[in-house]
View (cartoon, rainbow, N blue to C red):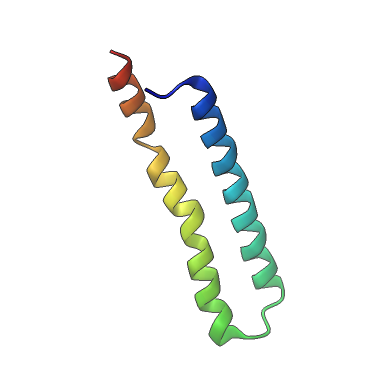
Length: 68
């Protein structure tokens, strides 16, 4: 059973990871000197916000399921 503290810690870590990933994507696009490599790097880094968003969607449903 997840407590509010565990959910809050997970939310904080998720937000930090998304912000860091967005910052890295921005810096790669601003300094776009090696398009061949940076295109793939940006795609890999972009998986962090997408994955965290789609993994956080079912958390509310699972949390309410475990509470009952």
